[in-house]
Each structure stands twice: as structure tokens, then as C-alpha cells.
Amino acid sequence: MTDVWPITSLGIIITIAFIAILLFWRIIKERRSGYPAGDERTQKITGKAATVALFIGMYFTIALLLVNIIGNELYGTHGSFFLEAGYALIATLLVYSLSFIFFRWHFGRKGDS
Image 1: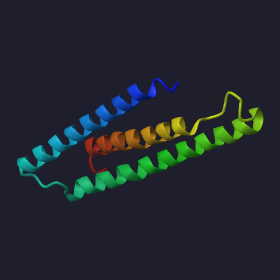
Image 2: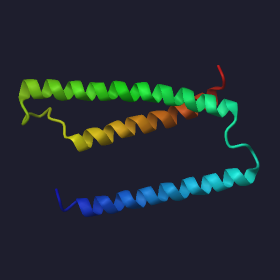
Image 3: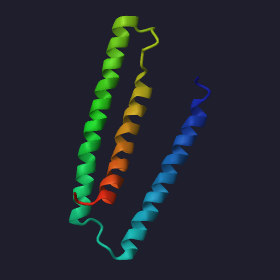
Image 4: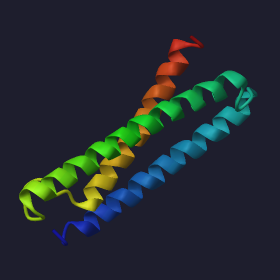
């Protein structure tokens, strides 16, 4: 498994650079448009989405911990339920990030209701 990490690391670096370029381009585009960067509605939507994403992420983390504890207690550390920390962290970060992105989009589309 160690021979896969150089390729994976390169892919991660390229992905981070691509996302940074997209974000930088979007910031420049929004500043040139002349609209304010953050009005009250946008801040309210972002706060609401962040709160919901935080709770979803916490519940997901608690579920992962319970699965790990139950798996370790029933099957020991060499059982099929043993969860590696790296995969658990990646899954948790994905749940936090994707749920925030989804709910920010959803609340922005839905309006102030």
C-alpha cells in the first residue's frame, strides 16, 4: 500500500491547487461585478447552513465512534469492524464539507422561509 501514496499525494496536491485557483478566480470575478460580498441574507443563509452541517457532522462522528467501539468490543482490534483513523477523518471531513455546501445551496435557493 505504500507504493500508492506518491501518486495519491500528487493527486491531492493537484486537487488543492485546482480548488485554490477556482476560488481565487471566483473572488476576483465577484469583486469586479460590483455587488457587495456579504449582505445580511447571505450571512444568514451561511450561518444556518453551517449550523445544520455542524450537527450532521457531529452525529456522523458519533456514529463512527460507536461503530468503532462496538466493533472493537465484539470483534477485537483485528476484526472486520476495525476502523482506521485516516479513513474516518477523511469521511468525516467529506460529510462536514459536502453537507455545508449542499445546505448553503439549498437555503440560498429556498429563500428566507
